[in-house]
Image 1 (cartoon, one colour):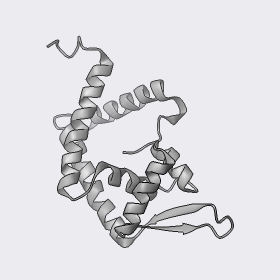
Image 2 (cartoon, one colour):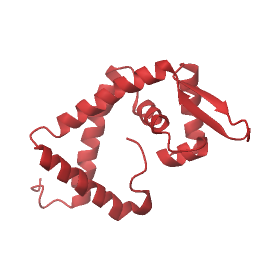
Image 3 (cartoon, helix red, strand yellow):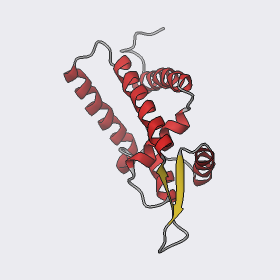
Length: 150
């Protein structure tokens, strides 16, 4: 195995992302949730969209995929969907009390995962890391760099 400074940066980033994702998914599963649930609840909580299509775009998932997640979450009592009174084609989703409680729990898990991932890094190093990752994401993602989940 090559030392990490000899590995191509995309490989290091991808392997790191996979390790964090696996750790995070395990922690979410222990709470009875999934990464999809976390992503959608967080997207709804942020509320930077006007309709389901905008939410799907914000989450970078297909509309049909989002609809399946929302159907399940509505059945589970985590969200409620309403139609816009002025344009019945527009549907909004909001967290219920149960959805807010679960989101708060999952947000705490995300915070704990972040702390675990950054163990041994000073606050200044974490700020630099965040800035560098945002710059890298911007370099390869353009205007969409600050959109998305998690």
